[in-house]
Image (tube, rainbow, N blue to C red; front, side, top):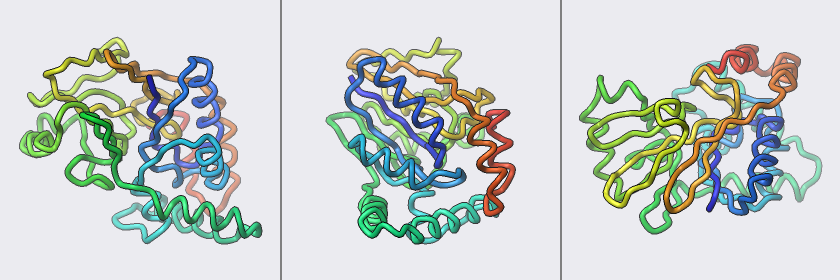
Length: 250
């Protein structure tokens, strides 16, 4: 049994609440599908907690943007990336500064365990391709091409919308699944675990999954989002929208 988190986006309050919930459930192993940083106010603290807890992580597009350059980002996301970079560079503790940059720079783009693949975006373009629920109607050929890269189960993040894609193609939101997806030997699935730090499915609670051999449980965790909102609004380098959207889960 293990847990998978994704898209923390420098939201320490949400990350702490999720890790506390995982610990209460007795789950010992945790994986992160990327975007530890970006958008939010506490990149250093979130990176430190991921490293401290020995959470195996992969590179998301915001992690990539901070380490390299933001590409095709909107203005708010781009500003947050440059601010995050400056905060990491301003660290006066040399060991911590080196540790954080080394961690970001060494993030892999995928984790493969038997027939389980973990990536941030899609199996076809691991760092930055989105798989949207609407793709089943508007771009089914895209999904069919993506599923050619899937052996059995693939876990993704990136869109911040939890749910399950099947190779029909079809998509099931978590409420349609009653928050549980039963794993079968034959059915191929791409499972979006949702976002810890910036949910976008009109549910303000942090999202993650718990996985065992038979099923995937989608978990939502309430946290004091106003703590994070206040920190974003108080930071002139971050777009106010990144705080306000947390109140609506969008």
